[in-house]
Length: 242
Image (cartoon, rainbow, N blue to C red; front, side, top):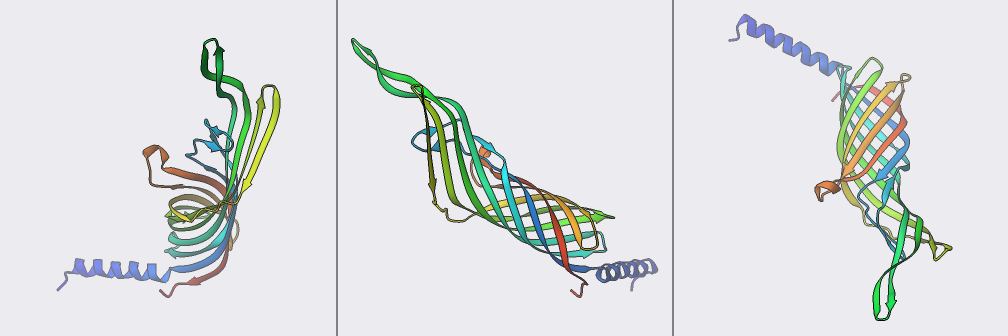
């Protein structure tokens, strides 16, 4: 038999559990984001030349999808999300000298590397699609909310364009190419940190930061990072029965 203290603790536990169950709510809605993204770990651009010293740059990104959120006790929640993300990869290299192997002495004949000009700018742009499926845990207080998410991102590249501007022996040249070398989808680990502000009963303003990683050497774990701003609009909000 339980003591009086034990019965009291059991009663408090039952009341807390019933209160949590009673205050659970299920919410479903849609989301849209616009932002910037940057792809990492690219070291060269391959065109008619192999260009090194490549720098990743931020470029525009777009996202749209749907979510399901389950709220406990009007404070904490977990959320499932499924979204489509359109990303643009941009890498640029500037001001690189061009050398080629040739005759540097005729008597006797001697070969070496000769400076023939400069690459003023090389630019590679590649479009990517991604299907994201993170799981979030979060909390909200008054009109502010915070979410921490983890999941997967199925990413594949579509088309690519390369433009190289150079000056060879005083002559300006520009070469470009466009290709549709689609990649097979690859799954990346996805991490997200979001904050939000409740604008109205159904609308939330969101600030999102997320990144993906891939297996590899320690300096090549980051695949891409993204920062965005967007809206989440509630379509359904009901008291939970499960």
